[in-house]
Length: 569
Picture 1 (cartoon, one colour):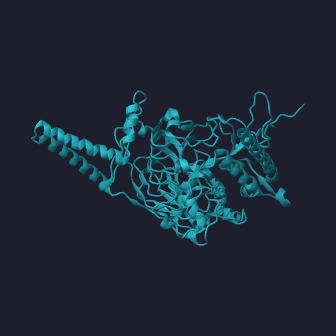
Picture 2: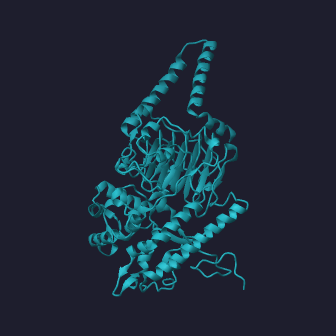
Picture 3: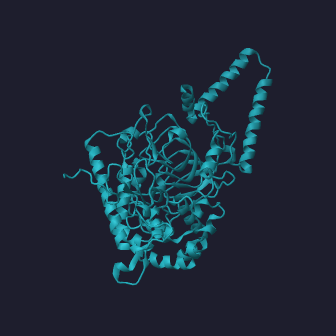
């Protein structure tokens, strides 16, 4: 029989009733699980990590193999705060939502700790280098929203010319297909070392002395899974031919690690070949806007493109000079990426697990409720309003963050002139969404940001010696007198409405006092205008002057766009 153009993957026999199932990297650890802490980055494979693993196992609690922040701090000679940060980061990208670190209260997560083998997977990928941002397809089209020079270029004089160019370049995120291929290639190269961290030694010679049990193989699920578009993720042990038919009542017999290695390498190679073939087919044929692997085109406000994917994140890209709204029914999946949006107001009023904002400028972005992690990167003059479990801010300038966060905000990379403030808005379904994703509005760490290295060791550029230890610039709190509430229009009118009537995150005393003072001043001004004894012509002059001042403020602040948007509803 003639062979088909695309062979079925090694993991699954091809039948008419069984669609092909391919291996994929889990995007979350690579996108939200990297920390620029030098003492956690090992470049010698498993050589150093295996003795550390054995030490941690000796410190762990019984059969659960869990270690708390004190054991991690001792083993890696890092501070207790950084050790807690490690545990919080792992919990935010774990493949199991039932793990105790995921379900723990924020005050308990450090003592509950993490499983040693999940920690090994996390530590190994700290050597991963991200793909470089690609140059913008149409530099001229974005020249007015991402200037080639900035008032803050003086801060970059200590960096190399290559880094200086990168700091001012117009950036475009790699496509999902590019990132997936890059992550799979990394796993293909390092799989032997990764498996050695999960394997156990038995009597024998050479590679045959390392075996892998079914429960240890599941920890590899931190990095990879089997599945396809629109399908559930399949645990590795269920798809492994050597464990697939195991009796759940009886522990499966461990198998040689070399056998698992060969099986996974074959599957990764098959997945990489498929990505290459699909990319080649798209280059030679028409592209589909609904395919999540297609790089998003940069578009104007009159032609906004949104790319939802059942497996990948929903992407919102290229919005310029407009308002844009996404409600729960508009979001496919549990992740959102906002990319290269400028001079716009963007509302994402939905419960999410992950959110990424990348390469945006002069915009206001409202993120409803994010239960795992938010990452804001390469943004300039952006206001972000976010209710989330945790947030990481990288390489941003002149941005203001209004936060309701359960964990300390993390600042990494080359940040300048950042400000933080307490959460300042609400919408009718907010409290329901917060509860749905597990964000506690009674805990807000907005004012305790942690600043790490100014140079990100996880990008693919080389860095000058010694700079990696330099701490990034922290963020200053917004002056309470400058703090204002942000009003979200009732986008849910005519749909399901919720019970939230006010900001669920309590304001600190200074900000609450300022807010009450502003309301009192407003009320006094309104009463004063009412009590002025003027004839009708003078009243009209006063009203006209107020309208002119208000109009000037609308244009100066950019809020005029929201009025136009509301008018069009």
